[in-house]
Image 1 (cartoon, rainbow, N blue to C red):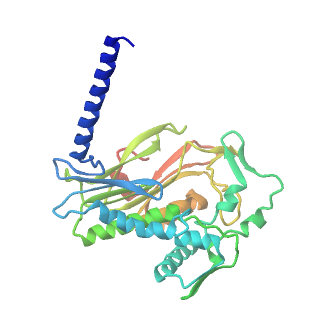
Image 2 (image 1 turned 180 degrees about the horizontal axis):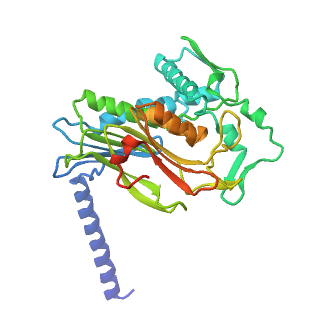
Image 3 (image 1 turned 90 degrees about the horizontal axis):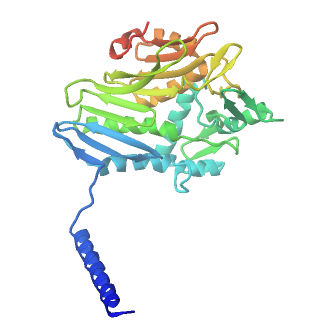
Length: 353
């Protein structure tokens, strides 16, 4: 190596060391930016994070302040009960064992609430449906297909929240193969609990979002109702358009997708199984959005209506003043139709005939 080349090499090494030293000291004196918690010029606070694999968004404004760590601590209590793959969660232990001795009162109450929701839905909502879902496949071109040589009745015997017996000292499954997935149910419950925490903290203007759930109270930073985007069919062929729903102190949950379906007997049908029969539904309800007093109720009701159908949904809408809904369905001989509760229509950015 000649003298000039050696000098250039030494110079390059010294320069690299200087850059590394400067970077090291800057790193020591800097604080990483936290993008999950900030306040804009209008006083709107933004909190974001993750719960059971789904991102959450919390917006609020007011004199009171809430730390993100308080929200995450609240959510961790629920995840410790319902996480599917964590060996320390209550649900994991229940799925792995036939009997749980001396369960916590909170876990017993959780199961009781789920069983009550299951019964009130006429068993159309069932978070233990997994074994039945595993033997069916859906496609737009091929429709609903059952795996060869499968006895649906035998598979269905492994499903049902009523197959759990509760006492003050134990939880027992009467069917050892019963497997429950409370992930979605826990998300609805989580927003209800965050809402209760905000109310207790004196915060009355907030918007919560997690997965298919929304919950809004009061007004936004512009003193308007909180807004949420939703898709709707722009014509009878199902052309997707984007609209706005103003949430008037309501919890919201959606289920289904009106652009995902197969056609059978001239009816467009959702990729939806009935947990009571083990077979696909026979009606043309493709998507539903429910607004009611809590996200837990909205979630269970939206899923159960996807099983029961649009006629049953409209009957419920007429009979229950506490529930509002948007239905997207197909009726034999007609195109895709849009229905919204009469009292809800003024909160939509698009017209409903």
